[in-house]
Length: 307
Ligand code: BMA
Image 1 (tube, rainbow, N blue to C red):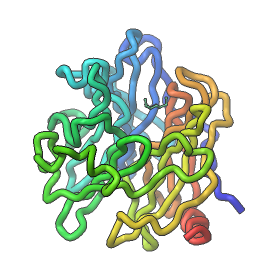
Image 2: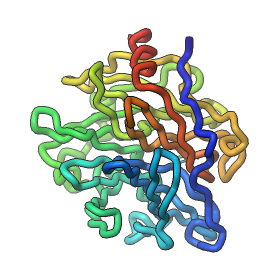
Image 3: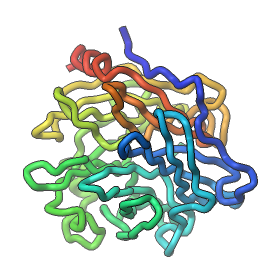
Image 4: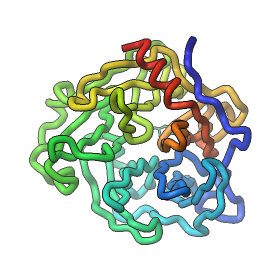
């Protein structure tokens, strides 16, 4: 039987507050990280003028918002993000949360990095990744053989790269020079099914499980419908995809996923595991934030059946 995420009855859990111009148009695509009983959320907010910045929300019991920032916590700063900061993915390492987001400018999309320990104060680390259209970047929550691991997406496929330190991911690292010629060699996953035929990109940062790194990702079909899928990467060698479920685990069905700023989009970006339940935070129709969940055991069994 195909596995599907089960939506919270409370969806959408975050909607635009019309009185705040910086998020009047949309609040979607939530990155998430767990800290004690609290889920810290950063979401993409779109202003009246169509510029994106990042807002903050604090969630308890997996779906109740108890606090939201009145101001954006990260706003565009500098020419590389003149059109906005979009799509944050958050990974916590030793108390520091690394936020990889899309910096959008007239040059296209680049990956930018900020870090925070408290979700109030942020340090900006500028552009990381190659000087190419790149996005959908997430850091693994632990290093492998002493190296930091990141996935990112030079369309239409997903790439994975290793670095001695997070600092080495900067655009100025000679490693990125001529990356365009080496994209194929660093590609780990390509579109395979009809529902993801146009392109794929990671959702939340990979989650360590006993069977492998769980990778929730999005796929776009030829009609621009965004769905979510699941795959498993080998624990020691994450370049190796060891399982991949052929059917989407979530697709636009509800009105808040079908009608919004962009129709027919579910876009997962955050995930936490609470009492062995996987909770996935996602954007609905580029307008609102939602959450859906599944027992981790069922997810791993479904992946096992497609290994
Ligand atoms: C991507 C990004 C996301 C968005 C998606 C669907 O390119 O812009 O923020 O959710 O398209 O419109």
